[in-house]
Image (cartoon, rainbow, N blue to C red):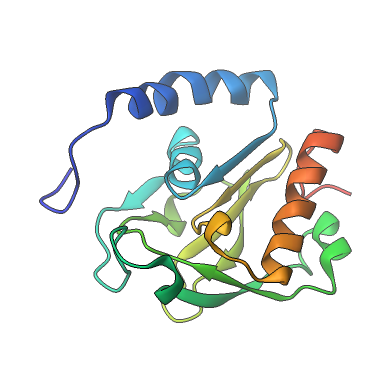
Length: 165
């Protein structure tokens, strides 16, 4: 916690600390958005950057926070099926980020912020788990919707990591 961190939300904290770990242990497909992305990293012993001044906060218009991220499709086999998608517009209005150098080997960085290189998307190497720092529900770009739909479809129908062939 820091001066810039809001009050704890006990229900969300319970989910992050208890339920999320149970879902991981059961092999349940997980798509974490924003805080969920951060919770996935922390569940695997990753750490967070507690406050980033360059990001827009959650009270601002999400459409003013849009930037493109480059997807690292070459290094991850299943992402090759997205070869027609190499960048997607996303929005960031968070003040925390996943600290890349704290991630375990079984969590791969799939995308980074173009200027700051902060982690925007992670995927588990073996489990059906994906984390996205951005809010795809607030982006109405066809390419972003198509990308997120493909990720969700894969997680639900294959029940394996997007990084596996």
